[in-house]
Length: 76
Image (cartoon, rainbow, N blue to C red; front, side, top):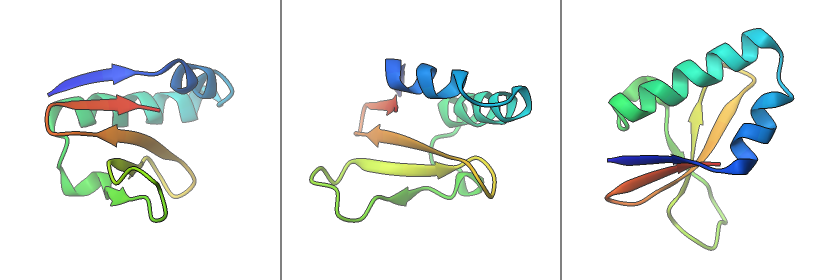
């Protein structure tokens, strides 16, 4: 699966603490290796116009928003 990173992802990442950045980067890397792993707790975003928007749990406070299709994953 092709994983892409949006400019909004990197901009949001820059606003986090070093520890939070490390956790997000680890989760992003894990999503590349195993996109459907249970530990990510992927949930479809309710009410989105496009049903391909999901969120993945980084920790209790942080989530990664992503757009998933059959062949690609865009980290937002």
